[in-house]
Length: 322
Ligand code: BEZ
Image (cartoon, rainbow, N blue to C red):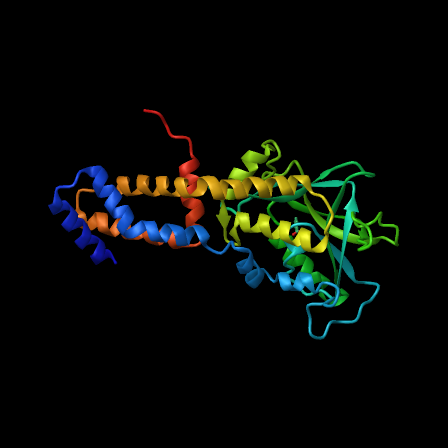
């Protein structure tokens, strides 16, 4: 491709086109098509179904363990409550799971993610819990029963996975009832669960910027080793709809609407603008061979996981006025 790029640049140079025409021709020839593919990269609902295992959520009541031969339940088992990615993807062995809620908290995207859905230079946003009204506010999620023989390894795994600011705490979980729109009042016997909460004192706490459009912009333009930040948001919203029909989470719903609006209305132009800027910078190189090489690298970078978010983030940065 670098050779093709070089040939194209040589031909254009000979044609006497102006700088703007050159830019537009390169964009059209090499980047316009990949832009569309990069935009669509892996966030359609049907792709989520394939990669994130939502079929497991639909069969929630029939598949209680994710092990072929689960250890028997004992009094020494522990329960872990998930209210973020654990709702749709538990990456540890469990022997039972229940859907339900905890009282007295509000789920908010107030935690920076520098190791899962963002990177240190461009953090994403993930959920944590804020204290709420003990009689009004509840957070829906999934409790997983971990066999006594497996709890050491599972807790070590989660402590490591959640090392960026989360701490363990213990509280009561109430099972969700299918017969009531909001899941009922949790009248049955509560289950003691462990959950991970990021305190407001941790370095990655981001609740000082709480405005939905600002958080949405960060989610829209972030990605990390676990994938695009938007995928985390959409997966959580889809899982909530499937598991807790009728339960309302205004913060989550507002974020989904806002990120979807950015994707539909702003993303194409932001990406095009960012690419044209990058190409213009490359065309300042003296040597055609160097230009071709760097254009090739730009193409590859855009197609890598996180390439779309890299472009969007660049396009959203305030420009330094000369
Ligand atoms: C979760 O539910 O996925 C989760 C949320 C915060 C910290 C750890 C796990």
